[in-house]
Amino acid sequence: MSDTPSYIIKIPARRVEWPTVILTIAIYGGFLALTFWWQSLPVWVVALAGGWLIAWQGSLQHEVIHGHPTGNQRINNAIGSIPLSLWLPYEIYRESHLEHHLDEHLTDPIEDPESSYFTRTAWERLGRANFLHAGIRPCSGG
Image (cartoon, rainbow, N blue to C red; front, side, top):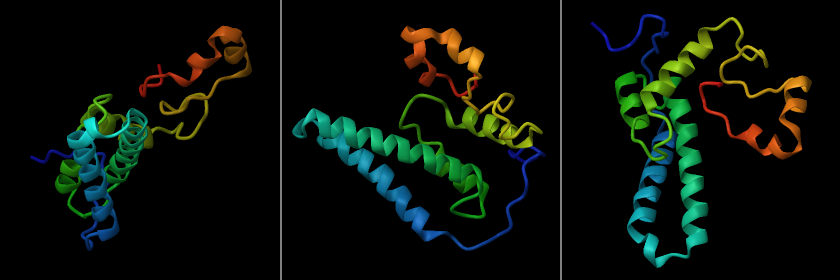
């Protein structure tokens, strides 16, 4: 029995995408270096570099879910599963993102579970004081 759900498209065997592997090393190596030397750096450098690396890793996780940088999804999942942000476990993100691609509402701004679109009515209900809250939404779309 495979760890991969039946609805996932099998990725054909292909060569390793070395630029993505190098990017992976840069992300995780940079995060380790930043963690090791954080006390000797200005706080703003740690915050800026840490935020950049975590955002970059989120992009890497998305690529890994879609079968990069190898044709072996177990290796790809191992690359993406290292938790840097501690925000959303990789496996939950992977499953919800793949379900998002199976949805007939893919990219529909109202129905897509990964959409953060607000209708005019919903936006107006937020009011002046709450408009900043619009950017703080969980990945589940709730």
